[in-house]
Length: 244
Length: 219
Image (cartoon, rainbow over all chains, first blue to last red; front, top):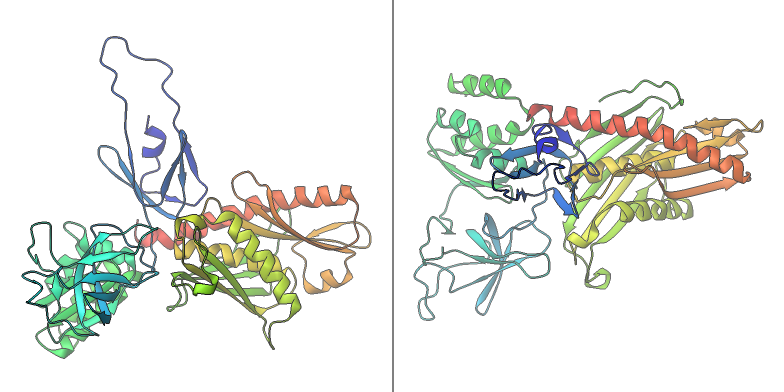
């Protein structure tokens, strides 16, 4: 049933392309008939028995039945459960306003930190960076961030320490960095040790042993966007051999 | 930069480059012959309270001429582009936010409106905004002897008796917007629409090749 869609996996599709799913003409009477379900990811929309593409990009597939469009964009649209790097802009009463690069600012409660109580407030100042997760993110409501997981643990989230460098890259590169066995990350690991925080909103934070190394990593990551894998590997090798 | 040769319905050579600006969320430049337009898209971003629409995004189109300040001519072209974009974008997916499309005219050698439409479509696609279909612009001129010239230059526009620009959608090749000038018969209008529809297929094929080339590094 998905054969027409599976043929297109890995190809570039444009908005307006559509697939139609007609039920099979023949139904097997012997075996049990299981209805096939599919999961549409970002960039795909269902309309009746047709599937419409609404973003340009590459069609991706994850067995058994997950499909989505992989596109290069710069503006972040919040999604529930994703982790982002935000900047605290306003501190008012019991909520902080956090800028995460979307269309409006998200709210972050002062109780949504590990170990925070009404007595014991977290130490957050305006201008601080926070690594947080979306608890509420839909188009009709104000997005809400939390710095704890479902059992109340920080789990790596919270306010950033001093030092380090924040910069932005495209959302496509972020997804490539966060993918399991990411080739970009593997190339970077061979270079020098560093601390790297990746926000799904395209913001990256890097800290290394020296300022110079931090800047080198930041520049390398920013240039990864426009390079093919062999180009990237030769560049990383040149830096590793001591081009600094 | 890609160039597409012309055959059949004669269009001038056209070329396009996507995400060439670093600051906007999406950008594209489109070149048709000597006409060239640069487009930048910002959004979905924060919206002014006075312009907020509760169930869809606010789309603003700004057109900057090559020299001087925008005037009545730019205003009318802005409106044509805005209404075309509103027809193809799925604005209800980003309520209470603003989309800004800025079109900078780099050089005008005829068919400016259709070039702006093409640049706008490529920039919106580059920004990754949800769209129900693509659109393209085609300009037709009818000269004094009644011949139809597609994608005319500024000199051909000046000598023409009538000038029409159509925005065509990619799904059913229907007319989304039309802007006309001069006098013509109903028959001529129908002919021009038919010519534009066949020309649009060439432009949509170019869009596809252009986007494919852009994603070739991440395939």
